[in-house]
Image (cartoon, rainbow, N blue to C red; front, side, top):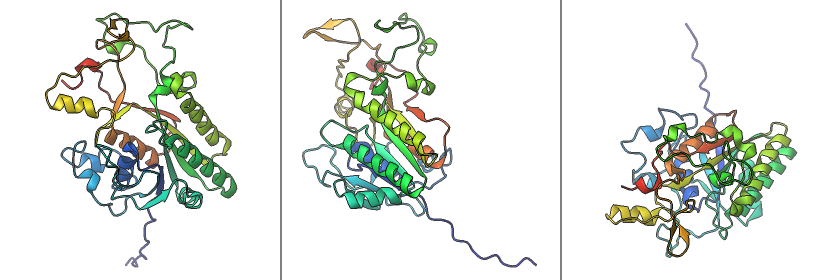
Length: 321
């Protein structure tokens, strides 16, 4: 007869620090991880168990799930924003909040976390999101070297760091080659993650590229203590649209949605340029991006650079119809 084995309590779930959970995507990510069990990425994850996970209105108000990631995060914006159509409401699944300028509390939160997520995608130039991510990176880098404790570091950046990258067949200083109008998107050669060393940013996003380089350098210099992964996300939508709110609202109400974007040769009044559906803007639903982040939390990926964009290939003038 086999003797009863002594019960061994499972280890506590990993602690995750998210820089700036008071932003659009920061709040959604904190809620998602606080509702997700470590190791459950894949077809059996929570997101696939609900009938319509991408639009489920109860998601953002659901409590933390037992055994889920223990999430802490920094903030600058108070928990009420009457001037914002979305407003910041603390995620119910979030366990610990620290003020971004309280260095001692911030340092403790970063040091105690096995996973640090730095989100600069929500930076608008004045909200301090970019600067706070840099501060958190410095804290994690210094602590790893002093304590020799390993951490997983995730930087959520933007595809705008690729905006001026030369396409295959494009010479220096030339305009990007335009495919024939009838050519299928499947036949147009694009970029992949392995091309990240060739990327060139939009002029307004040069500092984002420099941060990406510094972030990967921190991983290389850490002697294996920091596992660094960059997620270049497209335009984020869903769960309380921000950038696309006006467009989706008009489409929902049956209004015709005009869309003026750069990139074409056709002039319109005011010397602006309009793209009649040929400019493909990469997008990703917030919950899909959360799944990408969770996958990186669960698995040590070989790739140091990941694109996070929707699979849809419809040009801009078809979206919302």
